[in-house]
Structures are given as C-alpha cells and as structure tokens.
Image (cartoon, rainbow, N blue to C red; front, side, top):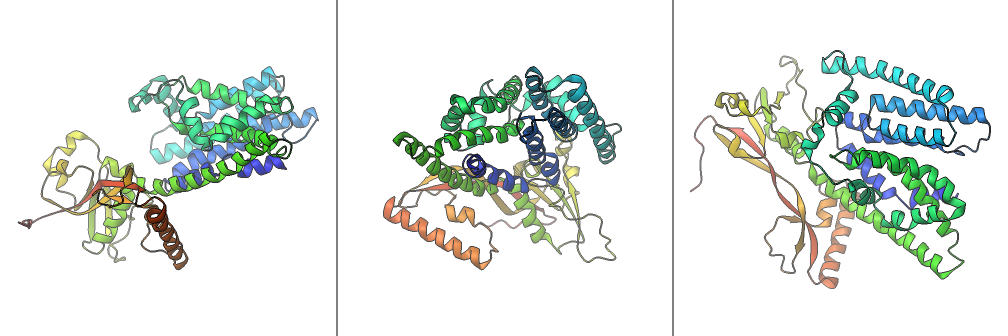
Length: 452
C-alpha cells in the first residue's frame, strides 16, 4: 500500500498534471497518436514484464502476461510511435537473458501478431487521409530521421543529454532521482525488483542517446518505470521514518519536495499556456473579422502554425453561403520561399498572421499584435523597468471570461502577491516577460492613414 501511495503522490504527480494539460492544447492527432496514448499503453504493457506484476507463480499465466506486453508494445510502435520498438527490444532482450521469455512461445507469436494487426490498421487509414498509397507513417518517420539522419537538421545534443538533462527535468522532483532511486537500488530487499525495471530503461535511453537529435518526448515512456522505482525507495524511507533521525529528515524532504514540485509544475503549466500565440492570434482574428466579408482568405505563417493553430481551431470551409449566414474561411499555409516573394501571391488574401510583417508584400495594416512568452524578468520595487511583464496571478488567470469562483481566486492570489511583494520582498518580484510574436494584418485597398 505504501508503494502505491508513493507512486500516486510523491515522485511524479506534478509532471503528469502538466503533461496531461499541456497536451490538451495540442492537436488531437498528437493527443491520440502521441505521448499520452503511448505512455498509457506502454505502462499497461510494461507492468506485465515484471516477474511478480500480478503475483502469479504459474508459468502459463506468466507466459500470457509476457505475450500481452509484447503484443501491446508492438501494436503501439507500429501505429503510434516508432521509438517504442527500441523500448520493446530492450525489455525483450533483458527478459530473454533472464530466461523469462522464449522466441517460440512469447516473442515471435506476439511480435508478429501485433505487427500484422498494427499494419492492417495504420496503413489503410493513413494512406486514405494522406492520399499516398501505401503509407506507413511511423516507418517513414523512422527512415527519414534515423536512416537518412535528417533529424540532425533540427539540432543536436551531447550524448549524455538524456541522462543529465532530460530525465531530471521529466522527473521534476530532484529527490526522486537523487535519493529515492539510489535507496531502491542500494537496499538488498528492493534491489532485484528495482533493477528489473531500471536496466531495460537504461538500455533504452542509452540506445536513444546514440541519435544526435534529442528531445525529451522520445524517452518520456521511461517516466512510469522511473517513477515506480523512486516509489519503492520512497516507501522504504517513509516506513522507517520513526526509526532514526536520518530517516525522519529524509521523510521531511520527501514531503516538502513533493509539495514544492507540485507548486513549481503548476506555475510551469500556467506559463506554458503563453507559448501558443498562433492559436490566440487566430481566435482574435475570428472575432475581428467576423461578419466583415462573405468569404475570408487568411495566410498563416510558419510561427503561427507551430504555436497552436490546428484544423480544430480553424473555421469550417464547407458551409453553403446560400444556407448559412456565417462567413466562409479559407486558410493558406504556404511555406515555399519563392512563392512568398511574388507580389501576386499576397493579393489573394484578406488577412495575414505573420511573425515578420516586413516580409508581407503589399499594402497592409497591423490591426492587432499577440504577445508570447519570452522568459522571466525581475520586477523592481519601482516597477519602472519598462518591460512587458505579467505577474503570477495574471498568468494563471489570463482568461477575460472567468466564472465568479475563479475571479474570487484570482483576487485572492493577487492579494497574496501584493502582500508578499510589499511586506516581504519590499517590491522585488519575479515576472513573466512577454514580447510581440504574431501580427494580425489586414489588406488595404485604399490609402492608409498615418498619424503625424
């Protein structure tokens, strides 16, 4: 029971709160094809690789567990994320060396079955939507990024990036990997169970470290396993808190670090909402231009499209003008630099969302500017720094249309901020710095009035 409580509460809850809510902001295909689905499937599958995951001693039942794990991971790797093949390979190799699985009884039947069913699902569906037959997206992505090495064009990181940077940030609470995991591995009673989880994950992360381009999302599937091991260590410490002063001190660290990590993660969650100026700009444009024209053509630049704009934030383009009074919206996402240099290209648009207005050719007026996150800043006692900054209350409660309960909470947090800033820090405070990101531009057909 103690391990289960620690698994839920102590090591990693803040990070998962932030992961879940961050991904709600992303396109649905990333929600269902991305990390949330694969992490869930991976966790469900990997629990059955553990030798006593269900407390079964029967060899036939254990074999069924392992087949289910291999099948689920293979299916998820074929349909959702190709990197799961590396995670699957690490767990299968470790289990094979531990004599828990065999080629003929578990590995080949489950692997071939999962791959065939996955291909039968993903190839027809993706081929239809992408209008390219046959198409296996995960294989194409793997070939492009790994075989051709094109992922390096998006930046490279040192080989130790995952171990020294990504994993600590994913775990959020430093106590989990600085104290709890070492305790879980160091204690003889918990060492075997901990290593059964850690060794395959270390192999998985190590193999992915060979790839020059690195992102934390590629190894996020290791988080549940690392969380489980840290929970074992946390349980060992917590159940012995009354034995010695050292254990009491470590238990106090567990509680305070968990609360601190949760607060920090909640703040990062609020700040992450400022990273989507594209979606905010499109929402503002829909309000500004609604009813101005019967048909509205909009060009969306690269930054707009990569900071929140998806098919789900766009208005429908299939409404009949004769039957519906709402305007028809048409969106263009051209990236070809040669086409963007042609003046006639821009003549077909009524509005443009652009990061750099000087690259938009023609007569245009900036009707609105959307700010985005640009880092942190120190607010001075005089508050005369001149920087565009937001306080914590402004970031958390940024929505102009908020229910009364949220409005009351905003006032409470704001009052607390003002009290601490005036009485404790004497005017000094940490603010969130904002800077202009997206300009909403409207095409002008006549002369533009410029104020003297």
